[in-house]
Structure formats: structure tokens, C-alpha cells
Length: 408
Ligand SMILES: Cc1cc2nc3c(=O)[nH]c(=O)nc-3n(C[C@H](O)[C@H](O)[C@H](O)COP(=O)(O)OP(=O)(O)OC[C@H]3O[C@@H](n4cnc5c(N)ncnc54)[C@H](O)[C@@H]3O)c2cc1C
Image (cartoon, rainbow, N blue to C red; front, side, top):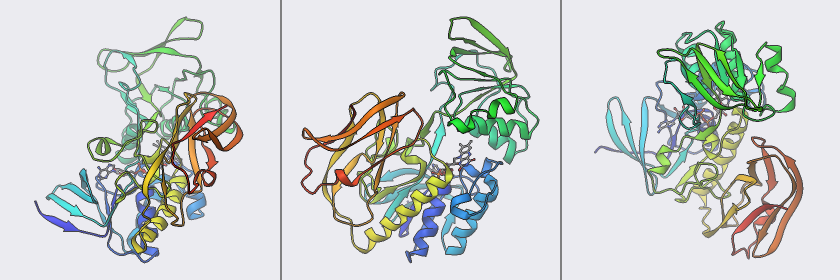
């Protein structure tokens, strides 16, 4: 198979990949190539035809497609080689990739690879939603592609399942094309989004049904109704002609599972160290691939920081012999990023770890190693909220045993 070479190969031309590539060029790194499987780069924002994107990073409030175009323009102007219609099909040790394009396949040997493949919403099957198998069941991402990229209206009266921020994005997308969501079905007793967003469905005339379970989709050819059981055990049916399955994001990690890289069961993404390196240190990772799910602005800033670490690693290798795991056996803690702590004095390590909970928790979040408390602080939060905690107290030169997080 033909072989090509580049310096930094970036898999995924969404917010993170484009921001990282542009920053690498700004830092003077040459041979930066972005590999994007779609016909256009820009990632998820390309089909989010609504505000607000770009406020912190571009100092402008833009709709998703304008934001995506701006990121592509910036990358091209900085001298990034963006290759669209280019799918990475395998990751090999020491920064080597297998690549497919409509022109043929090749192997790409890089100095460093950066994985920025983002996330995807859980499917109907992954959410165990029963019933019949009619047409008209879409994720928010698929709905947005149809509406904003192809100008199609797949249904008129859908039911939305889930109440994460992206579910509200689904309402905006529906309104854009004159579709009227009939209800949001949420399995918990309150919406997942933050307090200030809670009135949004009511303001747009979409009722929310809480404590729903046993959701089933009904209809022979197309969706006719959605059935569910309420908190009192009563069965209900809502007439509808479509279903939007929203949220429950998972990292786009099919490539990882088929590779030599370690995958973290908590996030479903790569297991990384405090410099953003995967278990093979020729691979860095950033953006939503690290965990489900953050805003574009967050991913942009995360990617720019990762670019600084890569530029530094090329000039003076970060090194770091061995690692200790950063983990949690506490069922209240769903995941922590990073998952590996290496011994290295290289500058620019992450200053904070990111955590998420599996249920509402109040208590002392504590980091322990070898029976000693390294750090602790009071915390009160809910699932799907970003939790940040300092990493520095954990990075001790004499650290030899795993660091475990618990809520006490
Ligand atoms: C429906 C929806 C609405 C949203 N609304 C907002 C909002 O209003 N404001 C906001 O700030 N954020 C919003 N977000 C979040 C925002 O879109 C993401 O945070 C951001 O896009 C993450 O960037 P990323 O680069 O990590 O991933 P993505 O943007 O998803 O980019 C990943 C890229 O990798 C490519 N890729 C994957 N696998 C391969 C492969 N094997 N080979 C080549 N290419 C590959 C994909 O095609 C994609 O282009 C929304 C997200 C969704 C899903």
C-alpha cells in the first residue's frame, strides 16, 4: 500500500481538530494535516443552524455553520493541510494510520497523531427503547443534518426523548422547519440541563413528562405514537409522527476499540495522562472524544492547550516512565479524566481533572493513595454537570500507588 508522511496527523476536522491544527501552526509546527471523513470540515457545528457558538473563542456569537466555516478559514489561512473525504480506518503503534479516500487507500506515517473524533448520541438500541420499528426515529444529530444540510422535514409532530442541552437544540431545530414537538419524555424527576435553561420547553410550548419508563415506539410503517409508563405506574400514549432520541453521548471510539490504545470504561474514550497522551505516547487526544460531552468553546480551549503540549513534546519529549492510575471505585463517580498520572517534570500539564457523577451527590470528594489523603473538598452536584478538581496535589514525585477518588 502507498505510504505518505506528515508531521502531525489530526484525526477529525471538527472544532477540536481545527482549533488544535491552527494553534500548532501559530506555534511554528510544520506539516500539520487534518483528516476528515465528511466532504467538508467543521464537525458537529456544521449542522447546528442555531446560536450560540464562538462567544469566548472568536469573540462573536455565531450560528453553528458560520462558526464551522470560520474555523476552517482560520486553519487554511494558518497553512493547515485539510483533507476531506478521508476516513482513518486503523490506528497502529508509533503514529501510523490506515486511511481510506474515494481515490484509494494509503498508510500515513506521522511524528505524532492527535485523535479528535468527537462524540455521538446513543441510538435507540443503546437506550433499550422497545416497540415496533417504523420509519421516523432519529437522533438530534441526524435530524439537524437533514434540516440544515439537506433542507428536509422528516416529520411534523415528534416526541423528544431526553432533556439534556441537546434536546433543547432539537426543539430549536424543529421550530426552524415548523415542526411542533408534542412532548419531552424524561426518565428522571427533573430536566438534566442547568436551572437557568429549565423554563425553555414551557416557553416554547413543549410539555415535559417526568419519571417516564418503559418507553415504546408504535407504528407499522411510520411512527404513530409513543407509549410510556409514568411514575405512578399508569400507561400513556402520545400521538406523534416521529421520535427524536437525544443525548446520552458516547465518544466516537470504534477506532480505539480496534486499536492497541487503552480505552477507559468510565468515559468510553481513550485513557489519557495529564499531558493528553494516550497509552501509546505518540498519540494525543482532545475534544469531546475525551468524555461526553462539552460545549464547542470548551473543546476549542482544550484543543489549544493540547497544541501547546504537542509543540513542547516535539521540542523536548515529555517522557515519563510508567504511570499510576487515577481511578474511582465509588459508584457515585461515573468517570474521571485524566486516567493515568505519569512522572514527568515537563511543564504545561493539565491543572485540573474533570469528573462526572452517576447520581446526585453531596459530600467530601477525596483523593487517596496508599491509605493517605492527597486532597479533599466538599462537593454537591448532579449527573451531567461538569466537575473540576485540582490535579496538582496528586502529582507527587514519590507517587507509586494508584490514586483513588471517593465521596466520603
Ligand atoms: C446537536 C448538537 C447541538 C450542539 N449545540 C451546541 C451549541 O449551541 N453551542 C456549543 O458551544 N456547542 C454545541 N454543541 C457541542 C459542540 O458541537 C461540540 O462540543 C463540538 O463540536 C466538539 O468538537 P469535536 O472536535 O470534539 O467533535 P466534532 O465537532 O464532533 O468533530 C469530530 C469530527 O471527527 C470526524 N471523524 C470522526 N471519526 C473519523 C475518522 N475515523 N476519520 C476521519 N474523521 C473522523 C467527524 O466527521 C467530525 O467532523 C452541540 C452538539 C450537538 C451534537
